[in-house]
Image 1: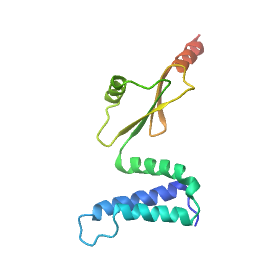
Image 2 (image 1 turned 120 degrees about the horizontal axis):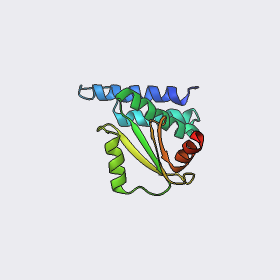
Image 3 (image 1 turned 120 degrees about the vertical axis):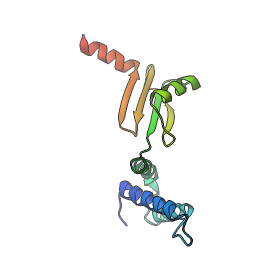
Length: 137
């Protein structure tokens, strides 16, 4: 059974959404728990357990596209304090569907890098500011 992580993710998201739509109807096809169990079984039978991290990222991405949710990642050298996270999330104008993750990045000298859905980036790091300074000099 050959499939890419993205193909698997798209099929998984479709199945979950269909289950949610049919949830209110008696005798609906499958519950979300059953779909997750089947997906795990498919991965195991196909020997794709090693692709699980890529598949999870693909599912998050497919879910975000389907629902309009956004996933923000805040990377910093030190743990961000609650008030800093609140300020950033307020500036990002989050909705109930959006999520925020924080990660420590030892490669940063100082500052924060904000990415949206693993692509769009707002680089507020010290390195970026120094690079801009020397680029204009």
